[in-house]
Length: 371
Ligand SMILES: *Cc1c(COP(=O)(O)O)cnc(C)c1O
Image 1 (cartoon, protein in one colour):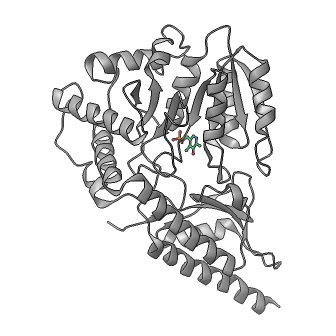
Image 2: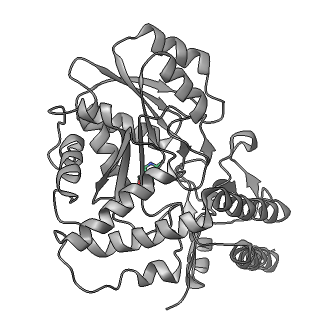
């Protein structure tokens, strides 16, 4: 099998050992051997999040959005409101989802270019006691901005407001501690910084708040309380588990625990520094604000020299050589996104940069010939 370099923000390049974990003997998901694996995963996720016994892990067989939907559909009581910080596409997605469930949503929409106005957000929470949860996207994967988790957690704690965090593309690749950061619910999935396969998502939630959401969910499959109860009582998921994906997740968690989160963050940041330097040397514009950059993903624009660069062409050329790059959220052929998460090192980034140079040369060559 060819090893590919995925520079899209998940699913990511995985290790051979994670891929090999998929190949296991057939087993029914209700067997105690499998329940042991689920329990192990739930415990390891708590450990990685810095959680104690006040928290529990609720697993869902879905992509990450499913676990977000479980929280949105299950946490907000009828007479309460949800405030959502929206400075990117994933913040907007939470708003859209909440509206679909006909929740009362307080939209705190801000330009991604500017730092979040914390005083304004505080004023909103302080003056709206109906808000039972504040939702935040920790790493806005649409732009590469890291939002201030700790500051907003402190704020929620100050006003006893629930804090719901979409940590999809940051968990495992950024410094998160649910207790220190006052996170009541953290949502993430197997296939980003955890470096597992797509198909499993999870919620790490405060038990007291999980208890409080009985009979609240507007969704059948994504009923957070019901899934929590099934897991606690039987160790099983309510519905069929993607067995092989779960084994791969267990392997990926073991590898993350062995590498440790601080070392993984360091590896990602080193990849990022290498990538960003290589891009700047080649004349690319970095569009993610440096002071708020996650160092996990960058939005870039082609050099401003009037030549007809094209994301579509570059993507096609790279894909042939086993490298995947990712479009920008805005439908713009002149900029794109590059993530440096997954089982990647600077050697992989260098391979990409070499190919990128080839592409730039080709475009320049063609244009010299035309002139
Ligand atoms: C990837 C991502 C999601 C959702 O992911 P799916 O697995 O595609 O459902 C949600 N929020 C953020 C911030 C993400 O990066």
